[in-house]
Amino acid sequence: MRVVHANFVRPPGHADPDRLLEEWPTLLDIAAAVAKSGVGISLVQSFARDVVVERRGVRCEFVREAALPGSWSGMTPWRTAGAARRTGADVIHANGLDFPAHIRAMCKTGIPILVQDHASRPCGRSTGRRWGLACVAGAAFTDVHQAAPFVAEGSLRNGVPIFSVPESSTHFTPGDQAEARAATGLYGNPALLWVGRLDENKDPLTILDAFELAASDLPEAHLWCCYHEHPLLDRVKMRIAGSTALSSRVHLLGRVPHERIELLCRAADIFVAASHHEGSGYALIEAVACGATPVVSDIPPFRRLTGNIGALARVEDAQSFADALLSVSRGPRATLRQQALDHFAANLSFEAVGARLREIYSALARTAA
Image (tube, rainbow, N blue to C red):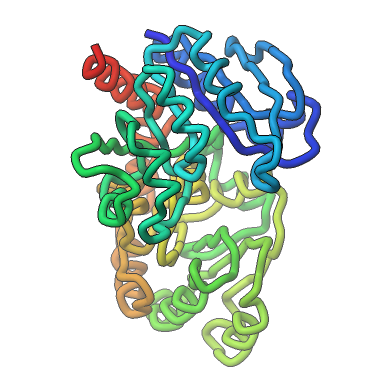
């Protein structure tokens, strides 16, 4: 079986294929994972110029057209569709729901199209999206329940097959927790880790409220927060400064290099996230890969990514998060860590994602036969 991965968006101005692949490593990571599962794989990528390279055993055809996002002037979706058709693929895996002209052009090849969500949002009864997705053979989300609003608004037709698969995985590894703590200075019993923007959707204030509620029962617990964008930073600082329980035990680390995030995940006992909605959960996947136990909001992608490990809490409910933190903190630390690692290997690793995509491709190819 042969499959082509099609990607239509790129940062404007890129003219070096290796630079783009370096900045978006998941493109090759997922393609390589699929190849290891026994599927012949190619990549078609919208680009500033026509060029073909091979990287990590994957043939990558870069097709010249206007950069997206940005101006639609000069967009030539039939060129990427033609490149996909020439691969002789049995299935086209198109990244994103928001490229109706490209996906419609891909559908005209007669090859079954799988579209994968990457944090798209329902947009009402969008005639453009509905027109673009009308002929797709299937759609993939981190969790199948995420498809419901797209079906309800008519963007995806009733009855289209919906598949569940993580968007990507991580190369993070567990390492030694004691060594990671020595290298990072992270401490706490338990040590809680937050990685994400400080904004309304990520909802750091609910985590702070929950930590304060649980603090008396967890006298040695510490919370460590990594973030880059931080529109709520002033409110977060005020909340911490106004609480004795928080001011001595919450540590704002700010922007942290990605390689250091791996060490922090290794050092942590519990990973916390209170998002109201997400397309997937890259930071969550990275934390689980390192053995951290998740305490996260009960939303479809987090529910799918955590399975039976850790604990889920109601969105925007500090008491629910506090109860979840206490429940996880009472568990045997070594057992919880091993459960996280086993879950990652079986469900979230590149090997698992590649195998799951092979299953999806096979199902679509059989339907089209």
